[in-house]
Length: 303
Image (cartoon, rainbow, N blue to C red):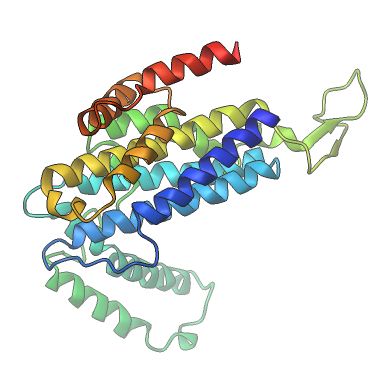
């Protein structure tokens, strides 16, 4: 338990620094026309930061299973950021992302029309529905969609994100599916709430509910995945900006960013990522302590 609290407090400190020096909370952000996708990437990482903060709060309260739900959202958000950063020159993915609201609105009206035909609702209660359907269809046509082609009107699903890049499919395969089990209340994820009453009888037919009970074995897994997702996302955004928008990074406090890099990498078990972060830090400051050496020293100390 002390180790868990120590890690949570460590992450809280990093989140505070990230909000100040990377997201520059409260400071003006100027995004030039034609670079709106950069705005969205930063906005999604702002959400990523709040998701991690919320997840840490749930873990502090021993709500391990519930924190899985936020972990799933964090992974989904991470996949979307990676998806947008690997866009083509025509910004096809960016356009698709921004077409989501009108697609969702059109689908809602179509679903409502279906419910009316089923007799679940009365058409007189929605007098403008047909007009709204026509209006959204016209808007979709202007955007280049065929309203009758339902496949083209599908939103950006996690499955679609996963199939767009090998790295995203790896995230989906190893991380997302397990977290989804808790989001969708898989029967096996509900066992934790039931407590054994009779020693000889398993908590399937005779049990009591214990709402403060938690699966502490999963806490370390959740913390590790949440941390790795956060640091990986941070690093990839930095790489993306360095390659395409270095002029934007020039306005950032780079020593502060490298300090965040360093402290996040100390919590990661991804050796490839650690080496990459280490190279960037050493290149910027040859006298900086090696992350690998620091991690090794910490491991020996803990043993």
